[in-house]
Picture (cartoon, rainbow, N blue to C red):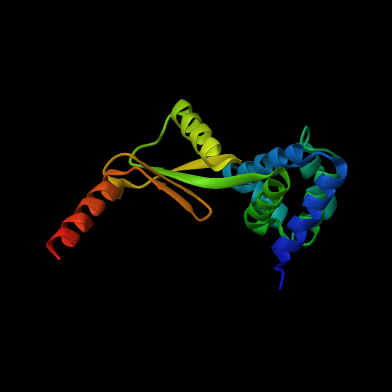
Length: 179
């Protein structure tokens, strides 16, 4: 059974597909999600039962100026009217997944002990994209347990070049030799 978040996300993905503006909607979704994340007061206003819909719509028109267009604004207004802005982050995840599916882009994570530079992340992304034969978008996450190196996870594919993995492999090899 489809969740309410998935239903709304699928509706916006369908609009983006029909308009042929998948990337624009993806950028707008991420930008609005980030705006809500950094501006707690905006989120509070758009979630409030005490602020009129007209006032919310005026704020949305200002905030979404330059985003994907009128249909995106109307989508955000609908969420505000239905008091679903509080769930926008979860809806946004579903939207991005749907848009990435349409764009044939795979999302993944690159784990490292320290934050990778933009250049390093780009190099890893290009290498994994070539290896998998599909465009990949990676997000860097910190995992100090790795000791060093990196570990990349894209769906069910794991590329592990971490020191932790190498140590675990050596440990397993020693156990097998003893047996």
